[in-house]
Length: 154
Length: 112
Image (cartoon, rainbow over all chains, first blue to last red):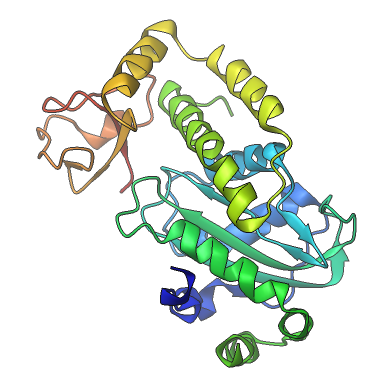
């Protein structure tokens, strides 16, 4: 199931942030939402932010080794979107290994997503970042093209 | 800013879905979901701010449908794909009132 997803199809240049500036969990989630807000694809920014924060109550999406995959389904969006953000200094995200997070994959999808791509996409990203070589390269990616090239090699 | 009753219900429903998928996220992808009880408690707290009438309607709809609240796009209920009356004007979307689909009865949330 996981192999049928081509993750590159979901990674858009306008949804890539090469230098995250915020330094706390809540503010970085807000920063990650901004490209989607500017693209006009979010119905209510504050509602999506609150849903993401509630998801963190369930357990940190900071999965360790410098990676976080904040994600949720929300009715306030009508398609599946991924935003990628990199923080060179790292962010205290209360990750499971307590290490600072450098690479974020924000995934949002509507509850009624017809193609059921949400969980396969989530799984594919987990699979990608489990590879230590790719993970290290992605954290160092300077721009969108570098990120895409690294993922295409995967 | 205080949320509308509809937004509170949307969040309530999204938390439902989160709880439903928690186990799958843990088993398939290894996400930590130790906070299930905490999230259920947060959902209960949220429910205290929702009018009993709306909550009862939501729970009743949940017995019929997987999701009680359906998105609306292009004036179509995406729960049953029925065209909504033009009188369901967009000017009411952020008020403290809730529209239901005349065809399927689901609560409606405009996403345009």
